[in-house]
Structures are given as C-alpha cells and as structure tokens.
Amino acid sequence: MRSASRDVAAAALTRAALIARAAATMSAAAAGLLLVDDPGPVLAALALVAVATAAQLGALARWPGLVARPAAVVAADFALVFAVLAVSRGGIAYFCFAAGSGGLAGVVLGMRALPVWVAHAAVSFAVTAEVLRRSGPPAEIAAFVVAFPMAGALAGLGAVVATTALTRHLELSTRLLVAAQRSAAADERARLARELHDSVSKTLRGVSLAALALPSSLRRQPALAEHLATTVAAGASAAARQARELLEEMRLDVPDRDFATSVEELCEAWAAASGVAVRTEVSDVQPPVMVCYELTRILREALANVARHAGARRVVVRLARTRRGVLLEVTDDGAGFTVPADLSRLQSASHFGIVGMAERARMVGGRLHLDSVPGGGSTVAVHVPLDPHGTAPRHPSAAAAS
View 1 (tube, rainbow, N blue to C red):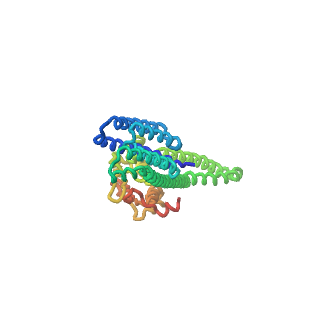
View 2 (view 1 turned 90 degrees about the vertical axis):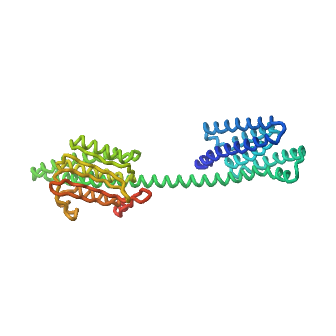
View 3 (view 1 turned 120 degrees about the horizontal axis):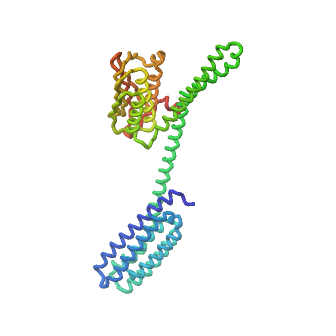
C-alpha cells in the first residue's frame, strides 16, 4: 500500500521530471536544427513535446491522485514516446524524451520500473541500429549513439534514489510535526489542569467542605448553618466566575494571532472597562505559545491590581524584544507601596496577585521585578530569556507540572 508521503514525493518529482525532460528535449532538438537538412520533423517533435508536457502538467495539477495509478501514467507516457519517435523519425528529440520517460517511470514505479527500462532500451537500440545503418557516422560518434539508449535506465535509477530520499524526508518531517503537536497538546492539557487546580478546584473544595458540615449544623447551630449556606452560595458563585474568566482567557489565547496585537487588544478592553487611560509601546515580538500565555496572564493580573489598589490615572504597557529575550513592563502613576525585599512576604499581607505573577514568570524561566514607592506609582517588569531560536528555557517547576 502506497503511503501518503510516497504520493506527495512522487507528485513533486513527477512535475520536476516532466519539466526537466521537456527542457532537455527541446534544447537538444533545437540545437539539432543546425545539423539537419529538413527541419520539419524536428519542429514537429518540438511542438509535440511542448503540447504533451503542458497536457501532462495540467492533468497532474487537476488530478494529483494520478500518481497513485502508476501503471496508467507509465502506459500513457510510453505512448507519447512512440508518438515522438514517429514524428522525429528517430532524431535526438526521441532519445532525450525516451530517457526522460525512464526517469518518470522510476519516480512512479520505483524499482518495479525495470521492465519499462528494458522495453525503452530495446526500442532505443533498434532505433539506434537503424540510424547507424542509415547515416553511417564516424566510430567515436557511433559509440556515443550506441550508449545513449542506456540513459533511460540511468535516469530511472536516479529518480528512484531521489524519490526514496524525498519520501523518507517527508515521513521524518511528518513524525516530527506529529510529535510537536502531541507535545503542544500535552502542554495545553497540563496548563488547563494547572489553571483549574489553582482556581476552580480550590474554590469547589471549600464549597464541598462547607456543604458537608451544613446538614449537621441545621438543628444544633442554626447560625452556623446560615453562615455555611452563605459560604456555599458565595463559593459556587466564585467558582462560576472563575470558570467563566478561564474560558474568556482561553478564547483570547489565539496562537495564530500575533502577540503584540493580543497585548494591545487586552489593554484597550481593560481601559474601556476601568476608565483608566493606557498607552501601549509594543514591538513586533512573537515568543513561544507558552510564554505568550503566561505573559498575558501576568499582564491581566497587573492591570487588575492597578484597578483594585493603585488609584492610577494613567498606565503605560511596554512590550519589547531585548538582546536576550522579551520584556513586558506595566507602569502606573498610582499610590504605590513599599516593596519588601522578599516578595513572598506579600502573601501574608494578602497580596496573592504579585506572588502569582512571580510564579508565572518562573514557570517559563523568567523573572519578575517589582519597583514601587509610596506616592510614586509602581512598575511590574517581567523578563523572559529566549534562546537564538526563540524558545524559552523551561523552569524545573514547569517540567514537574507537565
């Protein structure tokens, strides 16, 4: 059974073989016009080769699946060889066209084209004998003419080697692409699982605990039962909100859209919702998908912090490519605060957002820097290093999460 890679390689090389054969045949035949007394057969062969090649290329373009029917392709091409033979009367156009036909057979049949090469060689030797008998060229030219019928077999062997090499290359490329797609799908599942665990799962766990305690509290401690019921209702609403936010963020995560456009659209939407002016300074940067996702989440959290705590009137968002990676920077002119030497201390003060941003930066091998003073605004800067190929190093914690 023929593989898809084999058919793709055969279709590509068949086009190349048809074009190369037509070019070689027409060049050789045109040069032969200088050596013949009657140019009629040569001109007729040139016209036939041009028309036949155009028809073959047109058929292949319209029905690329023809290469999956090699017997029909070779039979039709064999008939064309005899037509060129009849028109050219055994001239150089025939020998070039027959050699190209051997190469075409090698492309579509592989080593199964051996009978075709033998048939071409037999016909070519018969034509050669007739040409030598009719013209009687010098011995050195005769030796060249006698060797020429083997050109079809040589061209066919070369075509077999080229087709095999191209098929293997396509199969390897396909395997690499499939592996990359599977890896991307695995990363996406791990990312979604992590987001669900960090948000919806924890909230639902709290709702579950409160719901378990609710029945036993209904009779003995009505006040506690009322508090637990309120907790369950609030937790369910929070879980629904978190799930909705996660779905919205996934819709915004469009791999086919460039990252700079995504950043600008996110900032415009936040400015419209918050009423705070945002100026964007965005360069044409396209980090890997995982880096884009984490930077987008960091940007959303940084803007949310500005809306909740800063009381800012203006925000500047900067995205730039640095010598060693990509930089995202969010600066506001708000109230500011005192930054501790260890950002983890912010967690005890209920500043979970900044700690989460730092963790997200580390997930893609980056680092978050926070600069702020009371009354002087704040700047959140995230730098993610990229290698020369544009990929980010994975942090050990990211590998463990996957």
